[in-house]
Image (tube, rainbow, N blue to C red; front, top):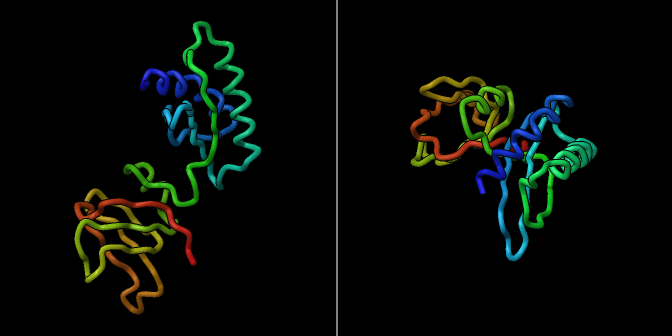
Length: 157
């Protein structure tokens, strides 16, 4: 079904460009007996419900106009935000997250911990630098990239 995903990416790109949104991800999956086409979009400052409705309406119209139909089976179209705690999957997303509050999970302990939260201050090919005032006078930590299992945006409490 990657053909469906690639087709949808091509169809949705001009719609997103027009509204200064960007594509986070597309998935076409079967859950129980139903197919779901999920399009995750974002923009600086975050996506609203109205933004999702706008893209859903325009994308649905474009897909309905296509002949032959790129998705012959019945499916549900869902357009949404990737979420407040979305994963940071690559260098580009990490660079965009500089200044944001993030959560990092590690493969092994670093300073007695396997997880850290703080403000991402910098990203290099070798490490990420996090800052958190709760850590006391050592309020920054350099985390080697090879120790990082996962990283995501986080909500600060």
